[in-house]
Image (cartoon, rainbow, N blue to C red; front, side, top):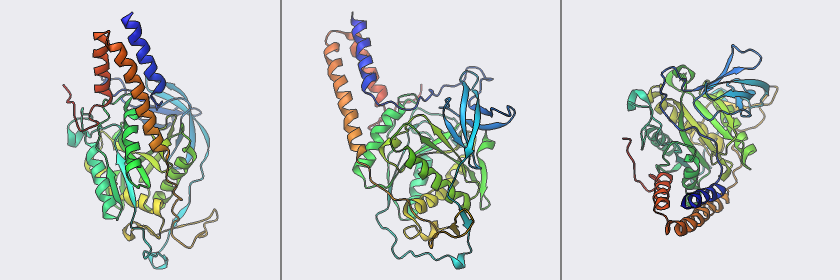
Length: 392
């Protein structure tokens, strides 16, 4: 009877906790031959690799390649980590072209002084083999160093940063539910115009290595969640980022992956998940990419008149015929603050409060229930308030 009651209690929790992307738990392969990443082939030409990705690949997901071709993943073999994608269409990305500095009319007199963004990490454990000695730690992994570098890069451009290093361990299907509390808090307590979740991927090194203006660094992958009310705006945000970066810093933005989850992007239309390379790439290359991404985001978020002079590259917006379409170098995106974050936070707190009440009653009669409850909350909120559990 006690086991039945415990089972029902856990079932109640699953009804109230927000649904997010299915993220496979980060587990070392027992077999050295087992692939550590998904390889997706062209459904028409089964010898052509469309993309590789570390986790979270499902049939129905969309993918936009570096040359702006959209594919739909139609089949996935999760055991062998292979699949097939069908070409769908060419995507219209904002077009820019290089423009001589002498002819670029850029006014910095009205630059904003209240620019602010938020940064956090859903998968805190992610690390880089060369510098960190491992691809994962149970705590603050090497990805936190990338977050700190991105923070300082923004600050050098006059953008203030609310940076959270809250832990959302373990790296499993509940990580996005836990990080949603952090993301909501950043939005509720700070006047930010953009919210960025910083990750690294798991693919061959060759997939991410690049040079920008002669400097070796890692490419950046953007991940957009389709399961939220802000999807269209989040997607257009990604398109604007890629469009400007493609002209200003060729080969910097790798591609855009559109998954079935929400990645906490339901909280604001200016949210984005960025993948800084893979575990096999040199960490110094990931660090080198941070200032470039900060410059791109400074321009795309705030427009040419409000961007730092250091962020402005010599590009201009053009129409389909290649003619300048605006008098400024680039237009910023209209930003609308979201009030959904506070409501979502209270919804999470309310759901957990309800669950705690039910479990409190059950636990009065069951030692086993008390143990399971303690373990659940320990794993769910591990590190949320700065406590770190170390890998044994």
